[in-house]
Length: 404
Image 1 (cartoon, one colour):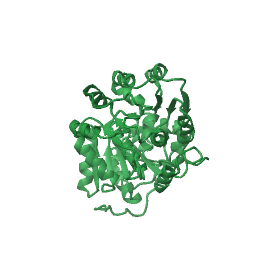
Image 2 (cartoon, one colour):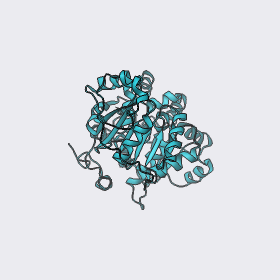
Image 3 (cartoon, helix red, strand yellow):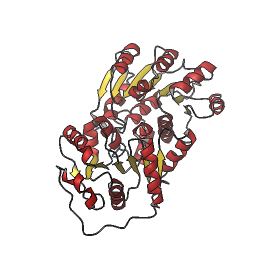
Image 4 (cartoon, helix red, strand yellow):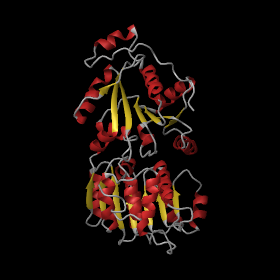
C-alpha cells in the first residue's frame, strides 16, 4: 500500500494525519487522491467511514493559494453535523499560524456572525445548500473564484430535496472548476447530476462490505423484546465501551431508552431530529470529547456522524436492510482501526438477521448473555428459535452505576 507522501500529499499534512494515528491511506484515499491531484473530476462511491473526507480535503488543500483573497474550495454537505465535522477535520490539518482560512456556513447558526467572518479572508467554505444560497443571494459569498467543488453525501442531499439548490450553487461556480462527487449510493438522480455538470469524470468505487467486514467484529445477541434492555446492559457492562453508539428505530424509542439507561447510572445522551440545533451541537461536542460514553441515536440523526474513537456500535433495533446495517456499523472500525458491533435480535427479527447474514456470506458470531434470555415468561418466544441457544454463565456481572 502507498503512503500519503507517495500519493503526493504535503509531508506537513501527512505528519498531521500520523498524529491522529492515520499512517496508511484507505482504499478510497489511495484511488481518489491521485486523480484529484491531477485535476480530474471524480465520482466516488464509498460509504461514510471509508476515509472519504481526507480523500477530498488533502487534494483541496494542495490547490489553495494563500495570497488569493477569495473562496477557492467549496464543500457542500446535506447536514449541519457533517459540515461541522468536515470543518473540524480540515482545521485539524492546519497549523494555528496557517494562512489558509476556513468557514462553516449552515442553518441554525447566527447568519450575521457568518457574515462578519466572511468580511475577512476565507479560502475554503464548508456549507449546507440552503445557507450557502442565502449568502450568495445576500452577496456575502462570491463563488466565482472556486477552483474545486466537492458534493459530499450527494445521494442524501438529493433525497432530502436539495436538487434545485445544488444546481443553483453549481451555476454560481466557474465552468473551469474541478468537481468531485462523493456518494454512498448512485441512484438515477445522482448519475444525472454528474452527467450534466461534470467533465469526463473518473470513477472510484469502494465496496463497503469489504471495508466493514475487515475492520469490524460483528456479533448477534439473541434475546426477547421484554429482555432486550437487560441484554444490552449486560453487554455494555462486560465490554465497557470507550465511545458507543446505540441505534434505535424511532425518536421515541431513543428518548425512552436514554431516560431508562440514565436512571440506571449510565453516562448517555440522545441524538435525533426533534432536538434543537444548539442541543445537538452540545451533545456531539460532549461525545467527541468523551464526556459522554454512550449516545442513543436514530439512523437519520446519525447520517454523516463521523466521530474518531467510536469503539462499539449496538443495534438495539435491528436494521431492516443491508445498507442501513453497513451504515450503522461503519460508525466504528474507521480508517483501519478495529471496531465491534452487536445486533440484538428477538424472534420477530429472525428474517432480518438471516438477510444480514446472507449478504455477509456468513453467520454472525453469537454473543451469550444471561439477562436477555433467562425468564420463563419468555418461553414461547424462545421455543420458536432456530438459531443456536446461548449458553448460561455461572454468574451475572454487577451492573456499573457510574461511567467516568
